Image (tube, rainbow, N blue to C red; front, side):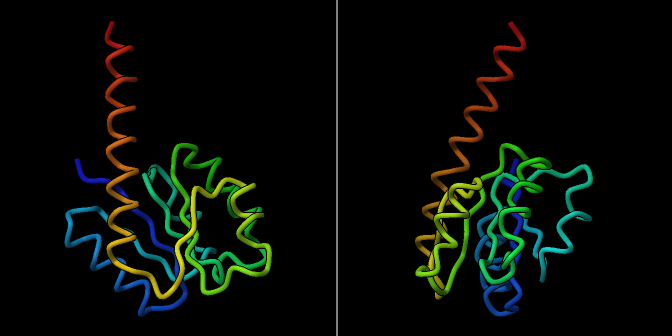
Length: 134
């Protein structure tokens, strides 16, 4: 089964480039323009990876990470940012973000991160299911 990935980015260019990159590799991708739409998407759906634009998260960052972690506790949140100097990244990491990628992003970095995270997730789910079956 293909990994499920959520992209939340207010910039349509970055959002669509990232969506196309991941869909081309067979991932199931949902792309949103702003963080206010996230609640509607989480009903009954979990995501393996969530790419979240730092500008989109904005001042709601901490609360938004908490909401995401409540709905999708096993999701990896990857912050996508234009600037690193304002302390937001440390706060995001403390609140549950897994990592950070700079804009403009390198497609190879995105794919490396996704390939690194999803096999780990898949194997842990298989191990968990195997324990339940015993």
